Length: 130
Image (tube, rainbow, N blue to C red; front, side):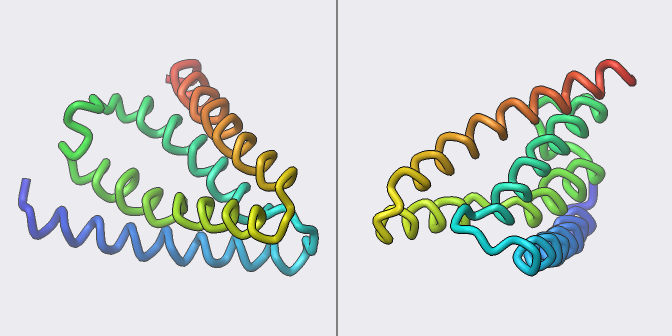
């Protein structure tokens, strides 16, 4: 595998995923005005589903998940750029600091729970179809 090609694929994938995240977040933000960080929640949950689905479909060995250009582009690049752990953490901290502690706890727990469930669901679906 050519390292410069792999780096370029991660770069292009990451840029694409970041733009996709911005567009999805913008679209949700234009329609939803509630206090729950729905945009980040939807992005991370759909990203978890996709990484579960694609990693199973691509038969990724997680001990060597950087092993192909396809996984570098799709999983590390696109989905790494699309999902956002840092925004999830910032959203949770901001809700907590705004005295929205119940919403912060709900968001914190439901993001992790929904992410785990959808990643497992994506993996199950890929095995079913594969």
